[in-house]
Image 1 (cartoon, rainbow, N blue to C red):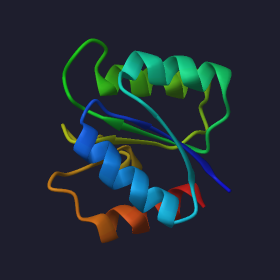
Image 2 (tube, one colour):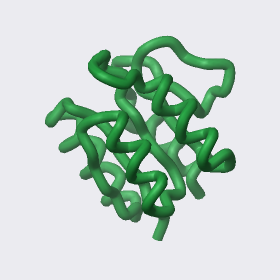
Image 3 (cartoon, rainbow, N blue to C red):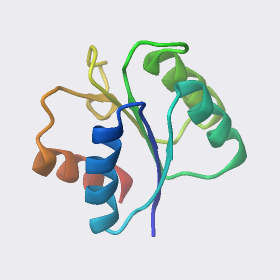
Image 4 (tube, rainbow, N blue to C red):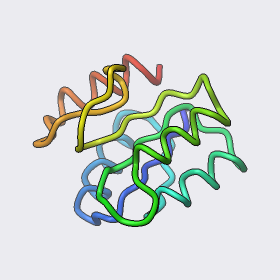
Length: 109
C-alpha cells in the first residue's frame, strides 16, 4: 500500500480527497499546515505528498521546495495556485476527481 501525505486546512477538500484516495487503495495521513507537512516528511516515509496552496504561514510552494530538498525523489502535487513546469507539481481548480485519480496513479504507483 502506498503512503500519501495530504496537507490542507480545508475540511471539505480533506474529506473528499481522503475518501477518494482510500478507495483507490492508498494509506492517507493528513496535516493542516505546510510546515507540518515538511516535519512529517522528515520523520516518516511517504510515497507522495499533496499540498493545498491556501496562503497562510509557509506557502505550499515553499513547503514543496523544502520537501524536494530533503527527499528529492518524492513526487509532490501542489493543488491550486500557479502550476510549475513539472506537471505533477500542481493541478488546476476546480478539481476533476477522475483526472485527480489518474494523476495520482500515474505518479504514485
